[in-house]
Image (cartoon, rainbow, N blue to C red; front, side):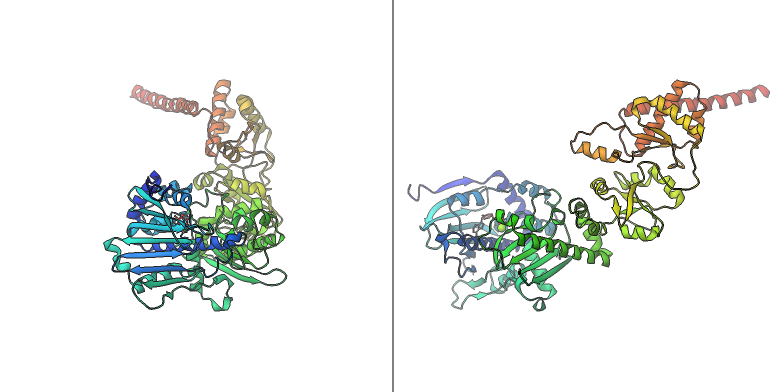
Length: 636
Ligand code: ADP
Ligand code: MG
């Protein structure tokens, strides 16, 4: 096939087309990020070459002197970014620069907010970086050659970003990639030395390869403008907060500052460096992609090996960001080897410990920074109680909950606060799980506790049911649901009397199979009845969650506790018509389910029953009134 025959025009994927349009508009005022994206790609390509050169003979020697060049020509209106990295062959060019292979793209498109700052940070996180060139360029040309092919077979890709691109084979002497942007007139002001230097230092200062900047037609030597040493490998004493913050931003693309960080050089039989960051906000996809963890990079002797978040951070710390650099792992390590490496297990244990240290410190400080952390990552951290048996108590001590204590706003009560208030002789940490704060606060289950001034933690996060299923004890005290089993609040309530027991028996008979047990109890002071889970059984809330998750849950009959002293129950005791008694029992039961945030099997029937009663009550009122008037009329 001749070279010209290999030239063709192709359409972008529709998604790319859509993305380009959106991006150019949404990011117009954040135009500078395009350079960060191109440099980051050049750096990735250089990392890849270095990594492949470890095992591929054909690449030996090519991994020396990797630099990134930025050249500008104000007269021609062009900006060129080139690298000596891995390069691409024709297939790779088509796959990488004509489609969006990543599954996150649609999510990205949907999550554009119109807030330019936020949208700009999303771009970095999603890896749609290359296309950001079109924010400033009217035409983009990519010339690239795969390293190690041993031929001069290169590829040229060219597009104006309007739906299609041209691609042709060319011959190139050097491997690597050169990207030439023809800037639109209104962006040509970018083409001056101090402006570009500022942008590179701002966004790409900590890229681990030298970035050289030079101007076309000038004889001066090009100058290196970034600080290309691996920051994590430097002694802590040399580094300022601002260095750490800048590095974080180049590592994550997060425009916000990190909440805190930890930097350690571990010496001894195994040597490694660790730089961990606690971010201030969750990347958009954190909660969705529970299993696709990224964000902790593994280097071996400063060579980037892979994103090793899965190997070094447990799931419940998946928000951590940073770098691990080992001096002792073999350079040709594979994912499989990593999986079983004892050294990596050690590193992982240290990462866990240091991360929890950071979180603990933040918790002690409290205040706005802690609140931000808790809002963004609290639910994720809770997974640790379930997954990490060894750290269970430590993680549990970091959790915060809402509480019935009036002075406690939001989620601010830790288990240790609870213990401290409970005093020496308390033996139970009481909690209530519910769908929402509102349902929790109004739950009839709290009546007995309010009356006795006992604090109850209100757990309304989806994961809380699982959490308490794994945490039945904290520092030797039992955690117990207020909605479960017999309440032992050891006070004056005493044993229910015979009459109450009999009434409960009648209600059970009236409800039949619908209900488990019906018992008089001490939970209630104001409500007539409430649902109680048995000591070992699942709460209603848990059953509901399992069903929502598509699991088969055996039909578990809820128990009903009645408040025999309530006027409704006292009135029911006097009803001799069994049919009417049955209707009232049904209502009592349905109400108890509703108050729990539960669902009725037949809501329409409930409404009908209530209406019948309302009509009866109102017409009884009318009768009395009518009768009175009549008498009055008669007597006058
Ligand atoms: P990301 O970098 O997140 O993968 P980009 O849109 O920035 O997304 O780049 C898309 C892909 O294009 C990259 O994954 C890479 O395969 C390829 N690519 C981009 N720039 C270069 C380059 N300078 N050298 C080699 N490959 C590149
Ligand atoms: Mg990129």
